[in-house]
Image (tube, rainbow, N blue to C red; front, side, top):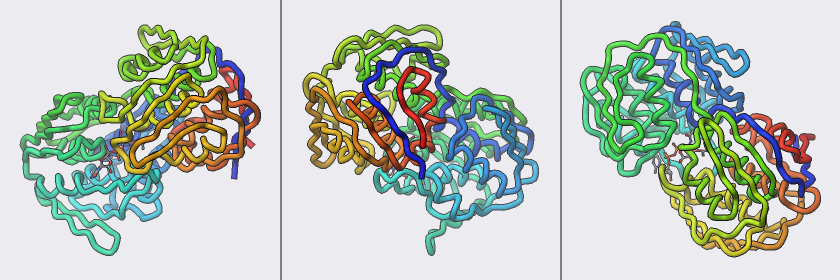
Length: 416
Ligand code: EPZ
């Protein structure tokens, strides 16, 4: 198994292009199933998860080719309605194919999705909404059998603004007869990107980014060429690394509005931040300051995906930060590894109290999930001495060659 070897203590300086968003790319790839015509997607990141999504397309009978960061998909010949267990288990977003497959084939058979081990992650909200829209859902023997004669337009009130459930409903209802409304919808930028993609194909969806999304079903979707938004969590990863390593980093191809809250928190911790059209500059000259309390919540609140990143950045801050993880039940798997590096962190249920220490030390550690793994890279970069990080297949699910990104900023990091 590959490992990352990191020699910490280097300041980070330079400019870096932010990759396309994983969490926007995955529902958009699933959405291509709604059209039988060619879909050209630019700025699609090369990741284990996007590769798995394209493999699902091929398994269902479609064609998918990559040329750099451009993906060309043609789903004219989609002929299957079942996704194999291996691909379903490879990532959480496999569940998003349920909505588009049902819409296209009126039938879908899947097993339960996999993904990062950060909590229970049920799909009850997806299935409840589908039932309310007229889908027959049968769960038996580890498989979910769904069929749909005709979508029954309805108002779906989500009990929680689930990102995946909001996307799945949009995918199911985009091609239909009548109007479907989602209330208490997720408001993440990736939802807006999915709306923009579907509308570019001819859908009539309004309101993404707000609590209420209106989907006026259309008869058919056509071909499209589309550019995916940049990855706000990737941007946050680079910003957090700069904050604790020190230096001067410019993030290019980034949407500052998507990371505004995180940037203002880094500013509160002592960084100098400036931004303009599609760039952000982070200058960190002093030791970061603790931020008091950070509570994760749905967008536009502080993202759960950035909780571990900020924890690493603030492990060496002056003062204390208390994290409250409100979205997932077990998203502190990086903490035992940070403790091995000398961090001072106490976890109690959903709370983690981080008392900043003067320094952390390199250690032999292991990543257990995607963002926790990226956080350990940040910790290794800011630590004194050498870190050997295993479990990096988790990181590869969301970051395109993370070692190249930080090497380009002057860090000593290599894959072995
Ligand atoms: C998306 O996951 C992201 N994944 C996650 O990113 C992100 O952490 C999460 O949203 C929250 O922002 C993708 O977009 C591919 P949810 P998703 O449905 O859709 C509960 C990363 O690191 N819930 O909003 O799975 C659920 O258990 C990843 O890139 C139900 O109870 O998130 C969780 O506690 C990891 N029943 C909460 O809601 C349901 O049917 C939020 O989940 C659905 C969700």
